[in-house]
Amino acid sequence: MLVDNLIDEVKKRENSLKIIRDLIKDHGRENLYDLTGLSGGFIANQNDLNLLETYVGPAIFEEDLNKLGKEHLGGERILAVNRTSSGILATILTLLKPDSYLIHFLVEPPSHPSIIKSVEIAKGRYLEFDKMDEFHVVENTSLIVITGSTMDHKVLDEETFKKIITTAHEQNVPVFVDDASGARLRTVIYNQKRAIDLGADLVVTSTDKLMPGPRGGLIAGNADLVDKIKTTAYQFGLEAQPPLIMAIINGLKAFKKESLLRSIEKKERLMKMLNGYSMFEETPTGVMVSKERLKHEINSCGKIDKQVLSKIEKKISSSDLCFIWALILLKNESIITIPAVSMPGASPTVRFDISSKDALNLDMETLHKKIDDSFKKLLDVIKDLDGSKRLLYGD
Ligand SMILES: *Cc1c(COP(=O)(O)O)cnc(C)c1O
Image (tube, rainbow, N blue to C red; front, side, top):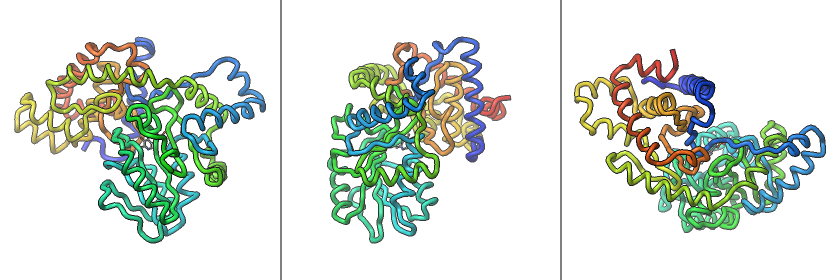
């Protein structure tokens, strides 16, 4: 397989970053479209930047952070962390006792790798459920994690959410919600309650998912628990530093429910234009293609003959297909999608997020054509193994 391990994924990412640098050098930032939905906004004005140079800034940021964080997530106490993953690690290290269970519920796998990895580091045990009729709390459980909305934007319904929280609390087990995108997706688009208002003890969200903030994480919840997690975060250097906190504050201030809702209307138009394909699925804020569906579309579109297809299958996995398509989208169409730039182990699903800032400058007709052209190119490229490798890793 072409992308075979985590090191390969890092190399692929570095190649993508180089392509992005070259595109910006040649055509400017305005002709590049980041549709990842994770554009890592960094809003800062001169006054904020001046404050960074003194000790006064952090004191002021702390107050704003607490106020805005509580408005956004609820809870008694706020902690800003370097990434959602850092928040997950700090929380699990703090609350999961060695040899005890962490039980994770999500609507559909895959779960975010940081949860399982953190359980390993904390020397705990891991149990995962995605069906409510199978869910149960085993003896010796010290933490329950609920993923509010998965990496693929699959959203947990509120009834199940509440049932899990009630069950956990009956056994005196705290509930921590990974609401990386869910804190906005669930509340704004699905009209659900905030995790804390549903009774969760702790929640973490990503400050660059569906909001104009930087890559960072925000934890909210029970004051005692957050204070304990804060201590762990300081010990391991997982807490956000003042420049990040400043941008998180400005991201929270700039977040508007209305623009998130407007992007939904555009998405629905795009989805209609794409009805010639069977591989696209609608997400709350865009369209996506899973590796299985991409493979199926390639196999069933009738553009590549059977013998060639079976040769390709031996060398190119369905994840590879996603990575190659993402690289074509980047190189030929100036569109950034997650599989081109993702961290190792992330889902290879190709997602076009219409709530992204760059989607404001892109009409859906143009995007439709870019998708068509890149898919045609993909059918061509995968017939050439060396060409595919060059595309993934550079020359
Ligand atoms: C994105 C995401 C994370 C990790 O966020 P980072 O900021 O990349 O650490 C964790 N869990 C879920 C469900 C996510 O979607």
